[in-house]
Image (tube, rainbow, N blue to C red; front, side):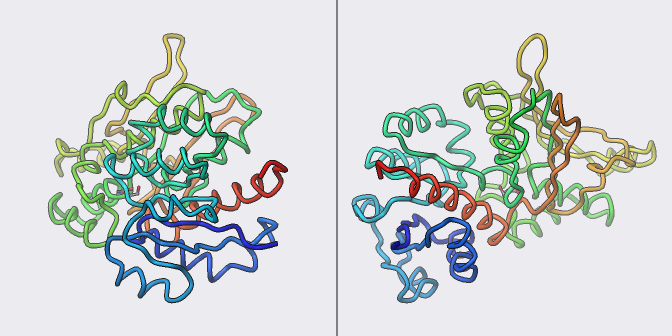
Length: 327
Ligand code: HSE
């Protein structure tokens, strides 16, 4: 059987990681998916840089609509980011009957209802494992591994930039601004780092986990969002003296009054596992009625960790698409 053909919109850090991992592990991925998966078309405004990454393996174009218009492409990966052109292109890809894989948490947290409805209308899939906690398969854990459970709450360190800042401030006594610059240089921070430090990025991710855990629509506008900018070195020091660490947590919880959805700095006893998640690492704790407490830990950002999640979605879609006699 021919490989399923994939079009990639945006070949930056995660896009090039996805391309590289797909090529490096192609035999294993083919075996697991039951069919090869090939990125055969890439759209990026910087066509020269894109060609340098993909060589002859894929056609490179500047216009994303050429990818969407290609009938040979079954899956479109959106790695452009933001709510602007990314939203338009995702909706156009769905309207053209393509499955979509995206890492765009901001887009789905804010426009998810419209996008999921568009996908349902066309009988295609929008997959977004890479949008929450990078390489940690938390969406699949909530949807699949924990599917028997009534989820009580989910709480996580889901922004690497702020966890890195808090860790460095605590362990090295460095100041906020200097550590933020390091996080930007290391590629953890969003293009606009206010999304990281004001808790917005974590709230986007918590919104998506809340929707999956509790079967509610994405409701980013209802989230309580507080970042780490008001924290001072003294707060971190005093917390430590009292036996606590300060972590920025994204929390969503079932209560008799409804679903809570909030992001804010939280005091956690320093003996807890999650209090010891340091640097840019992410961790998510899920409480289910049958399983009890489970903890997921790993890299929440970066080229190959995020590619790992993007490709897991490609494999899922390939399995379903290939098994569906209508396709
Ligand atoms: N800016 C994000 C973070 C990147 O720091 O976690 C991954 O979503």
